[in-house]
Image 1 (cartoon, one colour):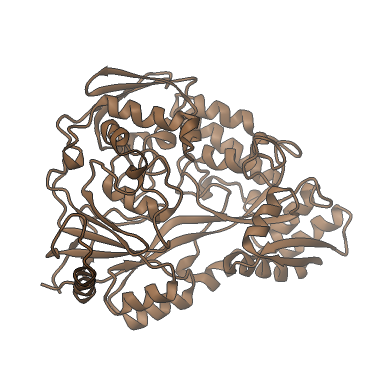
Image 2 (cartoon, one colour):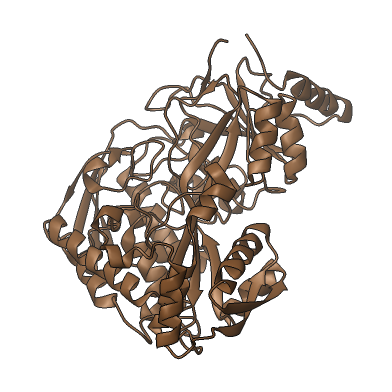
Amino acid sequence: MRIWGSKLLLAAATALVLTGTAMTTGVALAQETLNIRLGARDIGSLDPALTKTGDDETVALQVFNSLVAPPRGTLDLALENLQPQLAERWEISEDRTEWTFYLRPGVKWHKGYGEVSAEDVKFSYERQMDPALGGVHGASFKDIAAIEVIDPLTVKFKLHSPNAFFHGQALTPGFGRFIVPKKAVEELGDQFGFAPVGSGPFEFAEYRPQDRVVLKAFDDYFLGRPPMDELHLRYIPDNNAGTIAFIAGELDTTGGDRTPEWVASIEGAVPDAQIITLQPGSLQFLHFNMNVEPLDDVRVRQAIAYAIDQSVWSEVFGVLSGPLPAIVPATFFGALQPEDTPEDLRYEYNPERAKELLAEAGYPDGFSMDVIISERDDYLTNMLMVQDMLRQVGINLNLQVQDHASYHANIRENKGTIVELSTAIAPSAPAVINEFLSEAAAVGKPSALRNFSHYGEVGGNVDDLVTQAVAETDTEKQMELLREAQLQILRDMPVYPLQTAPLLSVMQGDIDLGYEPVGGFGQHEFATARRVSE
């Protein structure tokens, strides 16, 4: 049997003995250990209500469970495809205002904290809805009017208004949606964030500051004990150090630079490595500030769309580029599908049409515009490509490169003209549209999210269509409303969709996750991971 990283573990154990420091649980070296790189320097918090980073979420995903989940390895939020987790079945009222969940009996908490109950579910959500907690996920639960414990294993959510997307917004894994044990949280207080207690496949064993979190297999896990005895989640913030450790076999999985060169270097050094790209990853947009001339003219915005050749992105980035024909990726729930998009709204590369539209708008010779942009590689590379393409039709972008933090601060203060953004978001059409294009989300408002175009304030509005879709209980009518909203966005062109940038990780060739990872926010579940013989 092959044990990766055994030398590293032995060295760590020896160092502990020499310094007189005992491991908090006294666990011995496991027969099967998975070494997983985290890109952070240390824990933020492993309390699901307080997690802020993808690395903390990676740990939480192994320790906790949600009520329901999409099919493993996907972001499929179609209601009919939801999978049971802590809830073994559920009922939804016809008007989508009451969601009742029946919990599995006998699901055990780690560390002897008893069994998962409806009271724990109620506590988990109400705790996050309390502003005094200071959590970051409370907005996901704003539609909840009340939570009622029907009996020890039955809990009912009552919503302020109909919401057919409640499952994707508040019930599936990650971003505060995990269930925690009331008794443990109250007993451990602030320490719960550094020694969490869950019901998941792995239980907390040890935390070594700025080094690693050790999790061990939970023998009483309700879906069966994991094949791996331990997970060592190691804090290695430097990509080069992580890459070297992976090539040396000291890590079983790591992230890295999202560049074709990095992928090629791994393929050359570790030929059997598994290259995993999770779609859609980051969505990359150009937002046109419609309060700035000449971007206030729809013909200018459409001209820019025709002047950009999207095929170049796939040529340059290869497997690290995915299609984004509309603002909502085709894999998201409620997305407009490419085949349903009229030809005149596909904006296929046509520089001559771009010049015609510019002339119609009063700019036969083009125009120049100052544009701020982040120095971060993906932002700057994208904008340099756009700059070159627009130059061909007479549009000159004077790029002002800023550090990444300053750039984000400035675009939130409405200082951007053509604003590039690269971000992940919950996989549904309403989530994307509300975040980037609702009137309430426009930067400069107290309710601002990331509407840098000011769409809804000027040049169009689809808020009513989305609101109707969220409340609609007839799926066919719901899809039609969302389709019309997305077609209207393409007509108005407040945001140009560049590409998706899939999230990238690599895994040693002898690791089988037990499922195929095709979509997600960058975290993998290791409950069924095992080593396969060579």
